Length: 156
Image 1: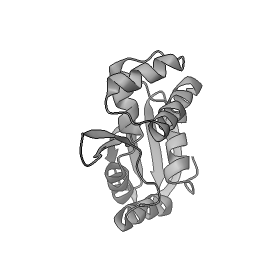
Image 2: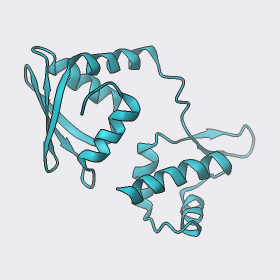
Image 3: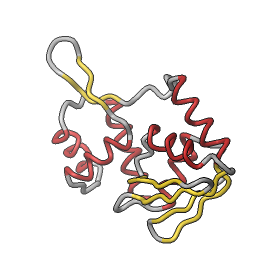
Image 4: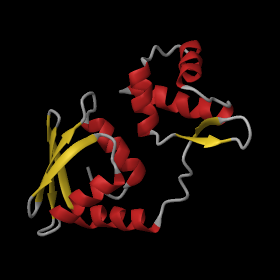
């Protein structure tokens, strides 16, 4: 996991400090920095970081990081749903059980889907319990780190 976090930090640094217009160029930069990464892994990393391509206005597109400060009002509302509803999270391998307040499981599961937490493949909600499946290669530590960044008040 530490290598993954280091790689994600390096990707952010490279995108902030260089005009990168293709994955091939980004792979080359990463290789020079000592990271051996496949194109598929890089694609997943870019998706997780919510990296997009923006126009430079004249010669093409380049990668850019999202503006963290521009969290939409609806996203804030969904974050509140998660904060209000979650009581605990436990794991067994890649399956998680999220305990919620009575009647909150549906709204918390919907919020997690809309917030597009990248570690979560899918969920099934009951009345006060949500079962989540983590994506292949993801760990509970990855999910907890994602929660700390996006929904810090949730106790994991």
